[in-house]
Image (cartoon, rainbow, N blue to C red; front, side, top):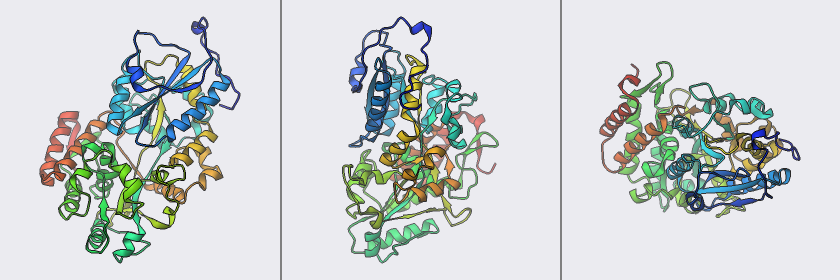
Length: 464
């Protein structure tokens, strides 16, 4: 919505309400939880989002938009509702807020992997009629639109960000181990050989890190396991789109768990306590990688946001000290490399106070200029063609072009309501291997759990 444009006319049923001057404020989650009474002030818009560690990028993005929105609509108040939590806890706390009219936000920041589960639980409402009249809907990539479309054909969110994943490696650690500064593995074995070389060198760095286990939440499933599974050449991944069934008994599933077992047994990764620390990512970004204490990390396109001048640990030298390598397939077959893509967006809960007003604020939040600045601050890849055409966006990071190009061959998680539970089963299988189970047994337990989740009529044997 252009600056200075008022929100669309409010429905007549709201015309009797009195509005008070509006400013952006931060409202602690505890304050909402303590609300009493069944009604909310309709002149106040609440937006819930994740705040993790020292990262305040989302807060600053929303505060900037709230300031602009208040200037256009001085009778409205925008309350920021930061949910300070790691990923899994964020989803749980967000759903708890949305479950009640007393506490529900008017806009929520949703990961595409949890969105359809929240739709199935009745937390979110369709916004098809709102997006169809919005100028920038046409600018959003079709794959991202599909990720926010329910099985009923209705749209339940406005995509904002996407991402891809690769191997980040520390060139200084590689040099100590006699490894090349420009490195591109062609198989999992190449990764293991590089990790062994680092371990055997004089370097004090941990050779390799892959997110794994239930405390890491979706990071373990997506940055970790699925970056392995979708490179196994098994052909079906987690779900068969043609048969509409979840895949069990996959040799690739066992192979992915075996890779995890190898890096643990050969002590090529961090100790178990750190692997299962839900806050380990912040330690990696602010200490281990910048300090040359980690050789390789499989992670997403956004992590250099932790090294900007305004971040908790500025690292201006990172473009020279860090290399990027495509994640190879298991044996170099198929396309040769693999990446997973995801993304976040904004949705309107079922208990919204006024959906038209909420969407009007959403339009301010996702204006072209606002999203350019948010992408730069957050170091993410945009889903919008208008944003991608802006020179400032194209030049904001030394890695943005590399990660954007990876999108051409990216895999996406199954956009189905059952996926979050399936993802949890993946994390449990990984954790079982971390704590001593053999991969075949962990895979068999996963198969049994998924069958219980989706029903025996919705599963099939791999390649069956």
